[in-house]
Amino acid sequence: MLEDKIKSKKPLIITSAQKEEYFEDGAVLIEQVISETWLKRIRQASDEIIERSKKIKRSDDQYIIEKGHSKNSPRLKRLSSPVDHHDIFWDFISSKISSQLAADVVGPDVKYHHSKLNYKWANGGMKFDWHQDIQAWPHTDYSPVTSALFLNDCTSDQGPLLTIKGSHRGPLFSMYDENKNWVLSIPEAEIDLSLTKKHTGPAGSILLLNCRTIHGSEPNNSNQSRPMLLSVYSSADSIPYTHNPIPSPYAGTTVQRKQATWASHDPRPCQLPPDWSTGYVGPWAHQANKRLNEGSK
Image (tube, rainbow, N blue to C red):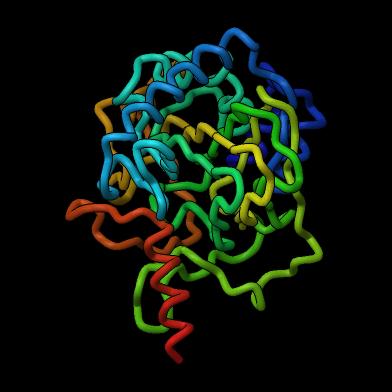
């Protein structure tokens, strides 16, 4: 099995206990693993992105804004593919520290898939429904991992990421509702919430999240924002089945060791998303439509 092969390798950055936690729980937080030097550069780039967002009047395929966003009070929810907007993001995502963290849980040869810069703003930054990621961008195996970098300290009242421990070993849920609308949401009644784990920690921490793990977040009820850089990697021999929802010229780049010459295949099936080649709509729009439909019943 792929997992056994990866676990047999000595980790490059994380500890053996942290690697074991990742495979047991489907997620592991590595505290303060990223230097203040990197954080300072990434925060500066993030500030530049927010400044640019002040000119945005409505969401598009790159800038997704919250209700109430304005020039004087910007509330950028997401920047898709930040690597295409500022060099520092690709510098970090392809760096030794970042790619080796991914290698510790996906295997020695690592490939980049996509990234996003998410903001959960103070005083009401929106919740994100429980969901699994891999159905949005299926691969030939389940090696893909999201590496979530905390740009600021994250406390329990800032809407931190929540995971369901061990859910990566369970079933994949449908990300469609009963009317075949893509909602990227799992009803709470189908989840064992007693297994919920809240991931808080200091700036510079990275949460490694398996692509099958059920996760979500609550609203940010604090007076501090919660910015997070999310980068998706896979084993180099894991091949995407479908169009990348957040395409980039960097997608498919090998960032650690060598390119694959064979493809890995996991026999477990995976649900397919809508055809993203005709355009991608951010998950908040899908979830808002779901809640609107529920309210009309």
